[in-house]
Length: 312
Image 1 (tube, rainbow, N blue to C red):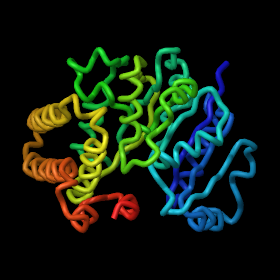
Image 2: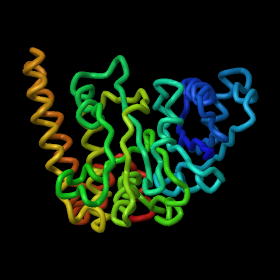
Image 3: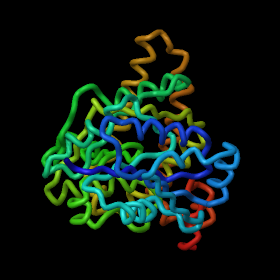
Image 4: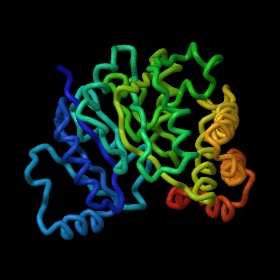
């Protein structure tokens, strides 16, 4: 049987991270190790102090590695986590995603055939999730499984490369062939990896049977900043994103969300949603054209401020 490690970057973790670890330890396929890549040791120590005792001492498979905020990178920090693992497969998760049941790890592992580079889980909304974000989960994470290859680019466009490190499992042998995640990236390391994998003949698998609870109610400005960084990542990787249209899927989701609001009798939500989409679009467009902007403006627009300190 293939072994699996879980790798979780954390920043300012709260008690929910410990609950998440408990849930992972109870999986039907228990991970060999849970590797925490924590940014700023003081925040991890604060969490343990608040619990009055180390609740992780009951487990024999926890590895905690600390990096500074200046050292953190979406791609390289995850690569460092992989370097601490010797498992056949490894599961990337974020600190705010929680297993929906005890079959999460086993369902993803079963999907990793030899030609599959990565398999990602379905994301379910939290109970407090707003209606627009709730519908986006249905749009991006449907009921049907999907195996995507480079042959699907004409049909699926950028969705061919969609993969989310909120919860995605990778084959180590393919990871080694690809060369890991981008060593310096502002964002979107998962889709860059997926694009490279597809272009080398591998597949990306969507596994709806594997589920995590994960959603955010972002403000307009948070959407702006996130989409700016998304645009930057696509501009910085023309080998992946330069050959396919990235905006078609976004327009499709906007149309379907508006239709959904009308269908459920919530048409009054449409104006606010359109404003939100405007912030997303402006952020994305500015990010795609960031090289034309003064660095002071780039830093103002970006969510990942630390990324630009080495590019000033």
